[in-house]
Picture 1: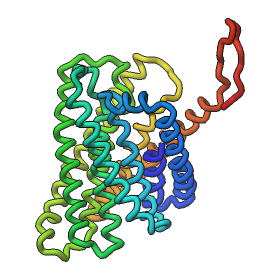
Picture 2 (picture 1 turned 180 degrees about the vertical axis):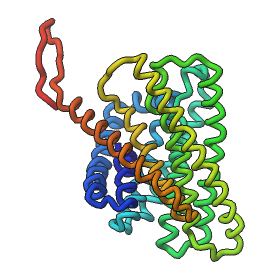
Picture 3 (picture 1 turned 90 degrees about the vertical axis):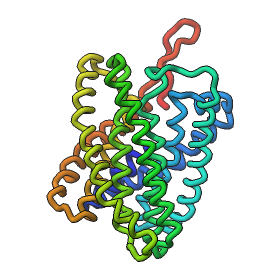
Picture 4 (picture 1 turned 30 degrees about the vertical axis):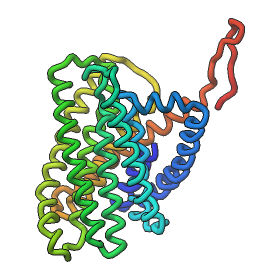
Length: 335
């Protein structure tokens, strides 16, 4: 929710939609500590269940949304030019969480003796490894711009940018094999597959932010020059996924029929918002003004997806819950 709301807010701000940007920014600021409180309460009350989730091939990668949410929040602070003194704190906090969660999760699933097959163990949430890694690169770039672009920080941003790209190459190969050479049922075509777009879109944004850094250090200049053409590949890949995912999700909806709110729908909002921000920033830094129309059009799609998901969430939360005490129906009060 923080990732989706925050990146749509960033997109609105970049496109000059200030009246929309600030309310979205406020929503993400409220949601961030609230979700932390819920997570910490669950860890305190149900530590075994949390650990089981963390070691799961299916649910474990979703913990990396914590890292990505920090990166999006930092991007908001930079783009809105507010609370920017928190950028160094967010960067080091995110880096620590990234190391703990990425190495902890990969170690847990590697040493596990009971492992699912590819069809049951791999889903779009695995691409959060890419999203979390690239969010560190984006956060490092924003921090570098405000601290005189120190070479160690620029090198760290470049390293996480390239590492995230390599992780995407590894995971996308598995995903392509899963889609094309294994049966796919409508129920398996869940919203997290949209992270196919979000993962390369945030890599594109990281590339655009690297292109915006000053190239004063001759030792890093060669690496920075490599970023511009490589980012074209990332942007083209993120663009490629969108029509295919639209087709597949229409197929799923026609086969599955109408259904209500699903928390996984935030996995659709984030990639759309990230694609808008990434395209706008890349077009600006590469001086490709003919791409300008794309983020302006897709922004409204992202905003609509956010609005429908946000309203759907509240409809579900406020709907009276039905329970059956002693075999009789009972209407519980709204949450």
